[in-house]
Length: 282
Picture (cartoon, rainbow, N blue to C red):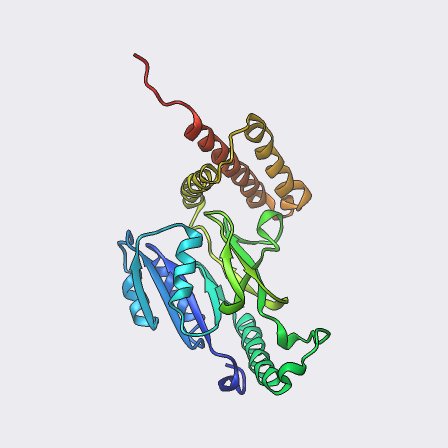
């Protein structure tokens, strides 16, 4: 913990968990410096995730999974502090990133005091780092035996540390996003992401998330178009493997680009499946 951390703005860490006992313990251990940890455990979770959460978190609740946006919004509603850090259970805050976050929270506390002192005289030209309402962090993924440094996986800036009073979850399931009302900055250091145990695990998740994405498209009234199914998967492969230099990660980069294209294919194939007539023949 950095010197003088007791003067920083307090922060609540919010995490969702489902059958991720090992990953969850590693995640929560990396944020023991936080003032509060809130974990929402999926009601379907059957491993020791809840036991780990109750040992390391200040507040734990079980709740049926309601989609990424709704579930994370609910977890944030349980937090005590205005500043929140949202993590996935397979993510780890490195010491360098933790130090950068605590420094940002120190500046946030100093900015709050300065804002009180300035009162109504504060002008719109005051744009110091103290007035940031949110911070993005760069996520690095470990997969297929190496850290992935190119393609669609890296760099991977995510808005994770923010003031709840100035931000909200938005977007479409299964990949919601935080929208902040104010200045957003980037922090040094990396958020380690141990997303998949192996290729089989990646395919299993692609199966789940493509279904979630297709359902969200259908709810939003998006109509299936044949060209989406034909053109978007190869376009995703070219973006990941060629334009974003996924080839520089060797065979893992190629496999990841193919898997990313397969996810896009499944998403639109499942949207087509939802819109077709499923009447059995007479």
